[in-house]
Image: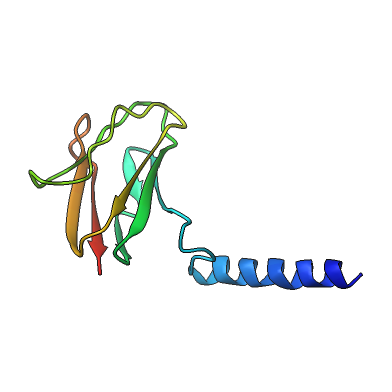
Length: 111
């Protein structure tokens, strides 16, 4: 019974962290959804060392590419349900777009 209670307390803490927008585990990626030919959210702020992951929820393929020449953001073509992740270790502002649909743009601020 004590183990069940502790499990419920831990689960409640994880749910509260999820609702408040805080990650319950530093290793969890921050997700950016690709849907309706847009990135959501289109602007995020994360800590240095965070893994950022794009998830394609569209029926069309997308390629996520950073604007700067030395960008770490360079995905392969992402079909429906494909994911691409990158660890952003250096503070700065990372602007990106879809090279197939250039009107799709986003920004990641790394602090």
